[in-house]
Length: 257
Image (cartoon, rainbow, N blue to C red):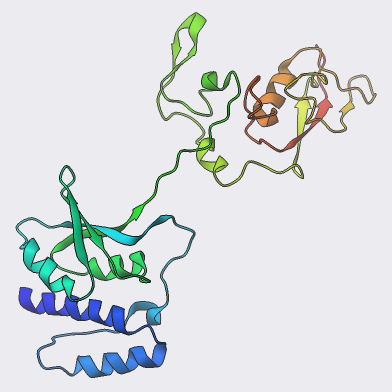
């Protein structure tokens, strides 16, 4: 049975490399091989040979990572895969994972999809590339534990230690989006200090419903604090980082001191 499963997997991989000339070619290959006597079962390439990728994933395009199940004859597997264009590059000893080269022009996810059907393979996956998350240079950013909590002392006078990972995960989001100047955040609070060095370039309009005028200045500071968290000028070397780097602020004063 194991021999049959191995044949199935090898044939599946063979289909993968020969059947990319369109649906008709895939069907012809399928019909030809499924009548071979030594093959217990065969199937056409998934999705008619079209890429399985659904997003902009970032990974190495010339190799994949493969981990085998226990008590597997790895050399025999490598020998059988060599005819398909897969070759061992090296072994990551501490992980017991093999780095394997793939044919030029092939898609790592598609090859992994086929290898993961092989009875000897525990898993096969692309070698994803990790990038450091966006990290602004604002002076007090290290104390903003709610944005990036690395277990740091976020309040030295009181020796307050954060819990690593207990944050809003916005640094991951910053790699994709930092906000738009077309987004206006209304701060409905005690107003905003209009000349604050970390906010004055972000403020547009506003109104004071307490005094019924167009000067929503803050006489309590709570509104200014909230505005800074939401959209302070970010990566400018001063103050704090705002969640929405590029968003604008509209102060709406509804509370007095």
